[in-house]
Image 1 (tube, rainbow, N blue to C red):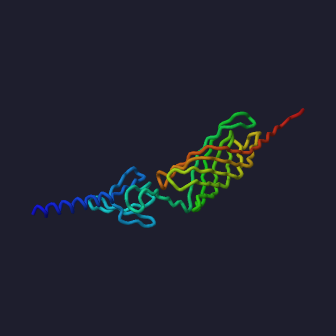
Image 2 (cartoon, rainbow, N blue to C red; image 1 turned 180 degrees about the vertical axis):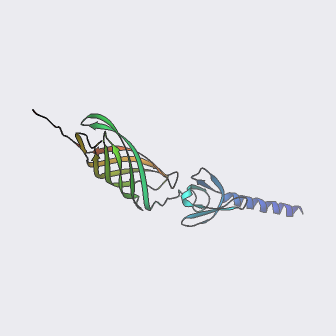
Image 3 (spheres, rainbow, N blue to C red; image 1 turned 135 degrees about the horizontal axis):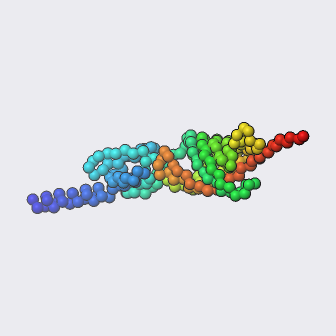
Length: 218
């Protein structure tokens, strides 16, 4: 009887050690950590079985990384960004103009396509204020270093901005011109469907102001 008990203890200990050796951890973007054993992976899904025998399925886009002893352990999950994307940007500019040092603001929206090789090409438009309002239409090219949660990127802009006078009765007419820009920044993709971008760079905006005057003689 004693030998049977010892044998059962050995079997139980072996099973416990085996289970401990197959412990995996899923780190999710919402801050949760799921502990268990990964039992299945597909192109888009990961299934994990917890200690209470519950089975959970997660999209790979929800997972930051995996740690554990399965075959895919310690590998970062690569995001798939391929497809159409829309970007909304709010910017503040500091620079010099014909009237001296000036601060400007702007808001633009870009719609385009993200290719697999970390390249994004889009067409954008919006409004910018340099003491008077301009409406730029530009080509947007973004180049990303990787597909991880945090990725450095560079951004190139080239287009034309249309100028608008403050009112139709002004003696000054504002005209737009060539617009271009270059930026460096970081993409924070902590929230898969709503990434955030932080960047700084150089922005060029050509403008022209034409003044008219009426003279009365007698």
